[in-house]
Amino acid sequence: MNQSILLEIIYLIGSVTFILGLKMMGKPDTARKGNTYAAVGMTLAILGTIFIHEKEVKPIVYILLFGAIAIGGIIGWMVAKKVKMTAMPQLVSLFNGMGGACAALISIMEFSVHIGDMKSIMMVMAGLIIGSISFSGSMVAFMKLNGNLNSNPRIPFYNVINAIILLITLGTGAYVVFGSVSDFMWPCIVLALALFYGIMFVLPIGGADMPVVISLLNSFTGLAAASGGFLYHNKVMLTGGILVGSAGTILTIAMCKGMNRTLFSVVFGAFGQGSAAAAGAGTSATGGSIKDISVADAAVLMNYSKKVVIVPGYGLAVAQAQHVMHELEVLLEERGVEVKYAIHPVAGRMPGHMNVLMAESNVDYSKLCEMEDINPEFETTDVVFIVGANDVVNPAAKNNPASPIYGMPILEVDRAKSIIVNKRSMAAGYAGIDNELFYNPKTSMLFGDAKKVVTDLVAELKTM
Amino acid sequence: MHIQMIYILILMIFVGVEVINSVPSVLHTPLMSGANAIHGVVIIGAIMVLLNADPDNIVSLVLGFIAVILGTLNVVGGFVVTDRMLEMFKKKPAKK
Image (tube, rainbow over all chains, first blue to last red; front, side, top):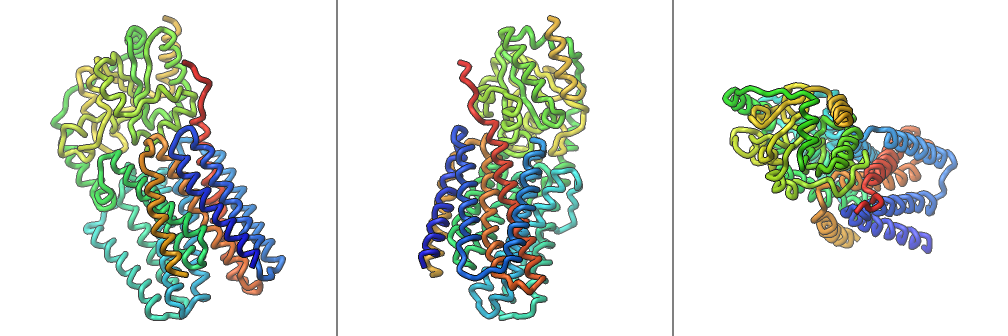
């Protein structure tokens, strides 16, 4: 009796640390501490579950348990420590998938224990379906972000087909719950259907929308964990799961707002082919010619301006040029040039991703300006230096209703006096659409690998 | 018992919404990653399944073993990655 009260208290502490941790993660100053709090709470809850236990447990089970924790812990730790900052989004997706798979496995194992108990079987099915969708969906998202899977195949009527698959999945799940099924084959069918639906759900969604999808699947896994909480009457699982479920949903909506899209259009809309064709049509009309600039000229231009705004994009991060960029910034500042970074909310592959990447290279936090703050400043900016960014500065978002990114808030760089764009080639951005900014008379193109170009710029500036 | 759980569920939905509201977009990625680590709490279910598993039933032992590995990956990986992201936001000595 006393023991179970102790366990309840530990779980309560766990729940409180989760709430507190998430709350603190919402502010830059306290964020890291918040994460640590939640981690400590989680550790307590795990240790409590392992050691406060009334039933006699055979040593072999403990060996397996600690073995599993050691294996998972070491692999998780190593992967998380080693991964490059640019690969962060897919890693989050991968870990999310692991959580979903864990929930699905638990449900499969609990099925036979609860046969005949309708309420419990309902929770088992909920955990199974949501967990499996989250797992297979996350794996597809992981492969897409990792570049293993580039196509967004679109079968005709895929929305209808997906809806049918989902209905069949839910229908089979409902049959298992209400039909008092005892054959183990049925939950396996539900598992297979849900896994298949997860794949079909994410497969047609374009790469640019992947962060939103990951965030959505993240809240799914939360719900899967919560249904486990219901099953075991375990309050820490319930609170943690629901917390992530609701917080994740809000986060997903916030991300959609950053791109000026609705969740509905991300999940069911056509970001891929239909609109790409429309954008293609827009391009040929734009035409125009592009203008090259040499590294030396670009260096002169920046050296003699009062204010330079750098727009970093994912391309900068891929080229690992953020450190040289910081060097360039320091050099220019020494010469009395005001340097700022304009960070679009969805620059990089996830909202806030670019801030993480720039912070990694020791750029002063106060120099990273959010879109709303920097947009009015472009009027007084002499040179905008765009490195590896594309869609977030595409004026089509403002003035081409046919464009798939129409309506997305952008960095209004075309208000600056001159624009230098560094790109590897004229290839389209992540959204797969052309950018008329490059044809703007104020724009000069500085082709080349971001790291090499910025390094050359630094060298050139040093000679001046 | 169930009604108590439903109470908690509804209240937690509000807490979740309240906690996340008005977070600067800078922190969206770490926050998502942090939330990702927290739903790793599902590992507790995995641990309970394994502890309650029949020691003679190889299949359930193996499945429970795998479930605990997956859950641990989610928890440990999630928190470590989040910490790495947030480490970069630490205040630098004031320059002003």
